[in-house]
Structure formats: C-alpha cells, structure tokens
Image (cartoon, rainbow, N blue to C red; front, side, top):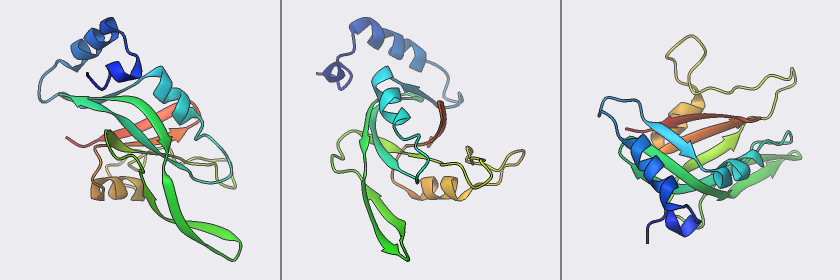
Amino acid sequence: MSPALSFGMRPAALLLLAALSLGTATERPRAIFTPRARAALASLDRPDRERFMCMHGFRTGNTIVVTGAAPGKESGLTRYGRFYLTEVSCPDSAGVMGLAHNHPADRDGDRRCWYRFPGTDVATSDLRSFWDSKTELGVIVCGNKLVWEIKP
C-alpha cells in the first residue's frame, strides 16, 4: 500500500499529486502539504519558545508531499531558568522528510521567516543547520506562512 493511501488520500488526489510532480529536472523543487499536515504545523505557531515537529511523507521527482507531522523529541538543558535546546530527534523515523520549527516574535514583534537574509544569498543559521542535517525538507512556520527549503 502506498504511504499516501495509508493517510486516507483518495486516488484522485494521488493522480493530482503525480501530475504536479511532473516537470523538468531543472525545475525548482516544491513541497505540497496535505490539510492534515498543515493543521499539525499550525500548532507550532506559539509565542513562548521555538518548537519542532517531524514531518512525514514521501518524495516523487522534484516534489515532496508532507502527509503529517508530529512533535519531535527535544533534548536540552535548563540554565538560569531558561531552556536551551541541544537536539531534536524523531521517535518514529520511518518516512521522515524533515523538521519544521517556529520562529516566535522577538521583543520588537519581528519574526525571522527566511532561510537567506532578505535581499541576499547569505544563508542564515537555519539554512546552515538544514544543509548539515540528513533530512530533505526544512520548514519555518510563521503564523499561517510556511517557508521551506528542499535539498535537490
């Protein structure tokens, strides 16, 4: 059984996903998030601290289809009353496409919702961490906006 079918997707939806994934090899990779995955990722948009989720799905050609997301297991330490995240792992690693995380607003109410500094090709620490990871997809959740990067 296809991974998509196990998440209750209809055959027509699978045909649409297959059609969307067709394209040339030089086309920019794209991500498709099912409604179930979007709902799970929306729960990351909390102001208290950065949180992580493991995204599950599959890749077809240049397209990654995210079918669901679950909280990652966070490890860290507390110092001076503040929690410092040191590692995130995915308990169920089968079908994990990558990690999603939120960016809570800073003291000025601003969010850093980008992998490259605006107007440049300079990578942020988020993009450098993603490049160093073994995952194919990285997502930053900022409100109802998803900013993503896919490895070729």
